[in-house]
Amino acid sequence: MKKLVTILMVAVLAVSCICVFAACEQGEPLADTEGYSYVITGNFNGWKVNLDPEDGSKLDAQYVMEAIATSDKRVKSIRKELQDVKYLYIAEHEFTNNKNGDEWEAGWSVTYALTEGAEPITVDGNMAIKTIKTKYETLGDESSWSEAWIPDAGSTNVRSLTPSTLYMPPHSETPTYEGSGAWNDNPIVLEAGTYYVVLATFNDGTFGLAAIAK
Image (cartoon, rainbow, N blue to C red; front, side):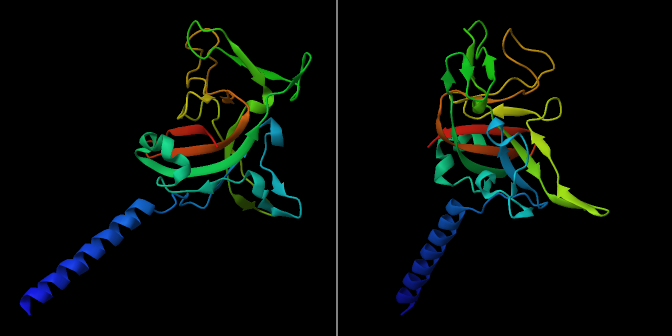
């Protein structure tokens, strides 16, 4: 009888451990605890917080970033880069890099040298990407969506989590080498296609931005 009880206790303990492990693996979405939402922005949507056309108190769903856990399969390729992450958000977007003769689709372009001494590359303005931290706030009789840009020149420190697909100018007041850009100016996706845009906020106050090919 004692042997049977022992076996049952071991079995229950094993099942409990499996359940705990599975819960840890699944994880909880790392959502902003202060009630902020995050959206992607660029030339493709006017560099602003885009609102629902029928309800200005809501965001345009196609640009809203979703809070996810580090265990989410969409960020598996950068999981090692997500140590000490506080908030984690993702959105899907198709980037276009089109040129008709001498005219870029966006009407402007971005040029960077990706490494020191490298030949500069130029892409359509629609390949540039940023994010905005936003909340619907009321001040007196006025209500609107706040805008805090990430990256924002001189006030945020952002690095690329996927340098092979997304170039992030250095967080420095002046270029670190000719053509590098500075102050985390417009990050660009290097090749056209559909990507998961990922924003990571770390506990030390810095940020990471990624473009993961879908």
